[in-house]
Structures are given as C-alpha cells and as structure tokens.
Image (cartoon, rainbow, N blue to C red):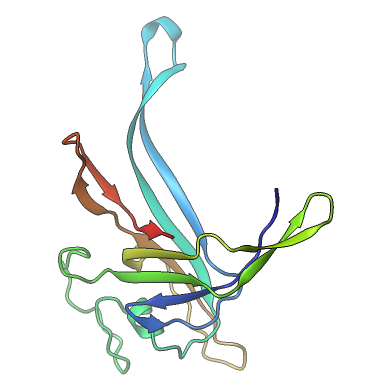
Length: 177
C-alpha cells in the first residue's frame, strides 16, 4: 500500500482543456429501492439496485483553453453570444454530450507506509467518458476582473445503453486502461 499522485491531461470534444486547480474528482451515487416490511417495522431488510449516477467536478485554470466554450455553452458554442439556445434538446440523442478523455501525464511515485518509495504507473492511465455535459442546475461562474479567471465546472456523465448477454439492460459510463 502507498500514496499515489499524478496529473492528467484533460480533453473535451477532442480539444485541450488546460490545467486544473486540483485535478478532477468523480462522484458515484447509487439508487436503490429500500424494502421494509411490517415484521421489522421501518428497518430495511433488503434493497433493489436501480442504477447509478456519475458526475465529476473540477476547476479549470485556463479560461481561454480551446475546450472551455464547448463546456460552458453546450447548447450554443458561439464564443461571441450569450443566448438561451434551442430549448427541448435531448443531450444524448442530439449529440450535445461530448467525450471527456483523461490521460495520465507521468509516472507517479508511491510512498509506502514505512517511508520507502518506488515508481509505479498512475492508474488509470486513461479514462474515456464518451457522453459528458455540463451538469444541470450548476452555476458556471465567470470572473471578469483582476484575478485569475478560473472556471469551476460540474459534469454529468451519461451511460451508453447496451443489452447484456442475459438480456438485461445496462449501461457503461466509459472505459479505463
């Protein structure tokens, strides 16, 4: 066991995103239907798994990076306009959600519990999430002033629908290597 660190190059819609303040953090939220019954009161006896949400958060430090406009204006990528764009558009069916790609930039260093170190690859080496978009109800702050123009962002990642060999529907959010 040890501590692993390492930076990632982040791309969105095949464009460079620039540096981040602290990297990118992913949040998984499981959905379940709790099963209770009268012989145990309100105690949960079991649960039915109903899927998962995947989101991520980060703060970009380079507000003029090529991908930023695509990220903060997903329905209207025009640099020179601020508009409501077309309402009623479905993210997945209208290809508004774009691919997010993370690529490890370096070999990390593992610091063992006893203080020793050893080189290792930072895992995952890549993470690809093909259907990513600015999350709903998340305000994107734009600073116009004499300070660093950072861009905090929350992404929603949609799964790719598929049918498993058992005939049960499922979905894959992305891949890692």
